Image (tube, one colour):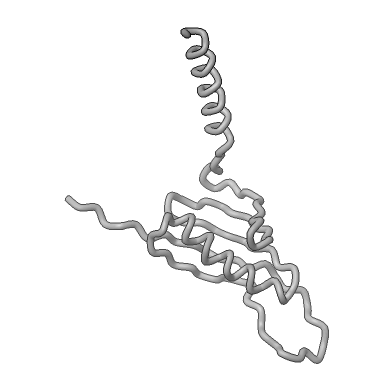
Length: 123
């Protein structure tokens, strides 16, 4: 009986160690290149401090822009853990032309500063 319990504890500890080491957060100021499988978006994320992030979403085509916008709102909510947040778009807003008369020029990445608001502490 002791042998089975010891084996189970070893297996549980090993799994906990593997799962715990799988989550790696970037250091402050370090840029990570990431991919969102749900919205199919490539993006760069830089943590400026505890409540501020710089996001750069790679643009690929005009039709994909709405996915990038939805991704941005969902990702901002996730990073801020459901708290109120403020987005400041610094570059990359695409114009809408229903019937473009000329080929679209290269669109720069959608670049955003994200500021998470924290709840005031109760004294």
